[in-house]
Image 1 (cartoon, rainbow, N blue to C red):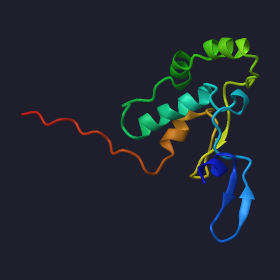
Image 2 (cartoon, one colour; image 1 turned 90 degrees about the vertical axis):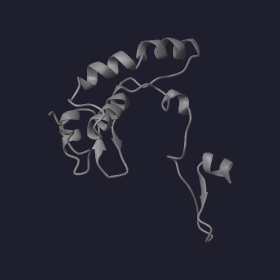
Image 3 (tube, rainbow, N blue to C red; image 1 turned 180 degrees about the vertical axis):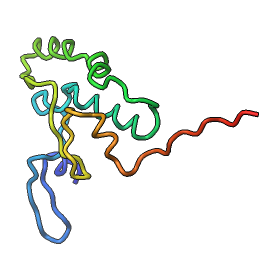
Length: 124
């Protein structure tokens, strides 16, 4: 069962079967584990959304420092792995919203559900 899902072959238990071209992938010729800047930026938006960051960071700047794209390119080149030409990508997430990294502040601030504002500690 697990092997079939990993290969993109699905069966709903009622006799319906289908192949999903967007099934679980671990490598996909380097496209899956490439350190996209937009992915790193998305994680930062969630840290801001859920109160782990008090202020909006320089989303792109932080992602560029953390995601070692040049190091990844060197390693991939040594193995003759083709890589995406753009370090940003677009993704339609499970809420239907498209994330593309173009405006992380607006994206983060648009969520209706987020962490409540932090309260200041009482001082006596």
